[in-house]
Length: 157
Image 1 (cartoon, rainbow, N blue to C red):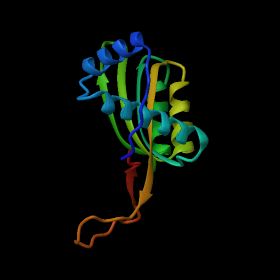
Image 2: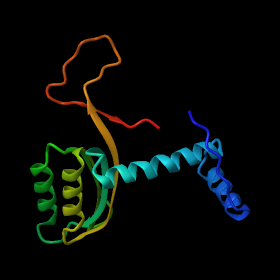
Image 3: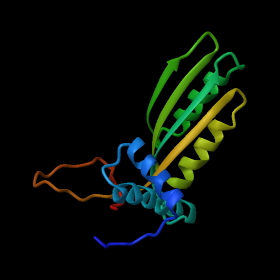
Image 4: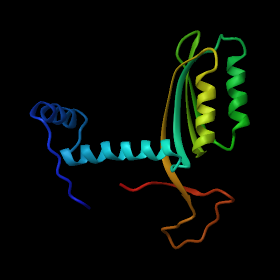
């Protein structure tokens, strides 16, 4: 591990200490490492270097919008190779909350999440992407097969 020294103005240092404490970090170093991880991964995803990802898409939609629930379900089925899991929560008589876990090529995942978020009747769509490297590494000695699926390992940091 490399040591990096950072100088901060007194005011921002106090606010950063408050943030560190409020979010439950054990030290400034762990908070800085987390911020750097997020920045590096955002750059990796933005540059195309993060070609595969895992993602969480959360959105609220009005199920009374004409055929929207069926269109959303059709989109999920059309992209079954990306969709790992969905959870549906009924909020009230008109609103539903869904969260979707996705895994696959970053461009394809972004295209699907953008398509869902821009459907008429979908509101508050938020996506969180984390770049991963597909691999077939095994830490254990037991031989097993993945039936065409690979591990998805997050970058270390």
